Length: 190
Image 1 (cartoon, helix red, strand yellow):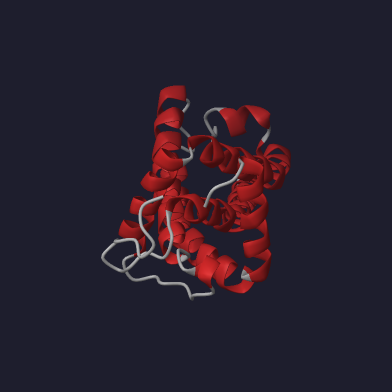
Image 2 (cartoon, rainbow, N blue to C red):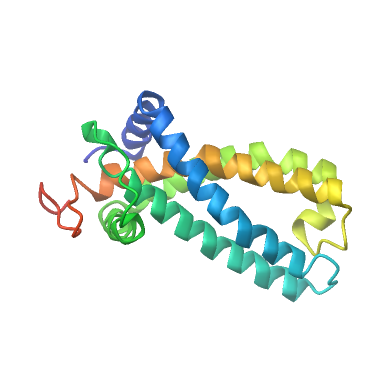
């Protein structure tokens, strides 16, 4: 898709509204799967005072979030043409689409990341800061109580499920026409 980043983000938002059930169910599935390593990585350092260890688990969290994002992207690749979610082979398909999108329109992808990140921050930071405190959100958890940890985890889950499909559709709009299971574009390269 050609157009300004604003045009693509607007079209992605319209697609998300039109296909919200499929998009959010797909994102909820990816988020549920991603929550397991997300919680485990935090539990591994919950009483560890090292900022380096906290940073290391955050890097792991970013990597698992990227995998979830690419899976959702691959699953939703046919939505702009009215298709259904295709979960089988979604990670490989989403990786190809994501790489094409970054090559074709890096500014648009960055705009999608910033917009999705802003929504995610609004959904997760207030609850996490209220439950854990700003110092523990930024640095080591310092052995939070179970309730505070649960609040922060739930806010992360909600933010992920809410924002994954938006960026997925941005990536699809700029990185794919209709993509076959083998990854070949039906309509040609962007």
